[in-house]
Length: 252
Image 1 (cartoon, rainbow, N blue to C red):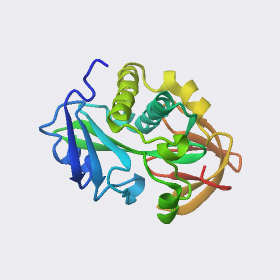
Image 2 (cartoon, rainbow, N blue to C red; image 1 turned 30 degrees about the horizontal axis):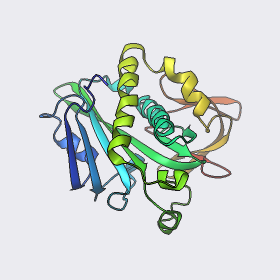
Image 3 (cartoon, helix red, strand yellow; image 1 turned 120 degrees about the vertical axis):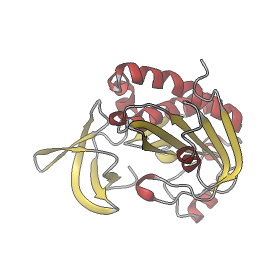
């Protein structure tokens, strides 16, 4: 690692939300600053959903990108998902996949969720990117939280993950991808992303604020990060910031 991502780093035993902490302190924190926490009391997922996990059971990590083009926000969750997918395979020796746009899967169950948020101040854009990797949860714990489509590294490997090593592995995968993304966009990473994407080739439901809006067939992913679907003979381009995707016959 060259060190700009995570060159400065903070860890909290308890915080409201690692993303919120970075948003509230963007003005004083440097580009590439990383925050982790054992417990988030006000964690959030996409579209305002609550996200809470027992203390120490997840790697909750957020990082700050300063002076970053806002138009690149739509593809960032995909890039981060690709990095986490690679990192999990490298760290744990397991096969992973991605679900458009913001989930990493293992054994066809959710291992990691991703949330990216923009902050505009003085006509300059910064982006806070957060990810949560399930590490220690048992099947009983996940089912008890109605997370029947979730898994953890412990469930997939039978071993307790080392949080520090996992964090370092994720950052080591992320940094070169972010460097390349700034230089060339997401297009160079599309072949690897699409080869891992379980959403493609599936019938899906497009949902706005949790309400079904359209049934479609997921055909492709654009270099901008949009999911390209076909519904009733019409091509529909789906932006992750506005619409979520659900499988008709299960999670994906």
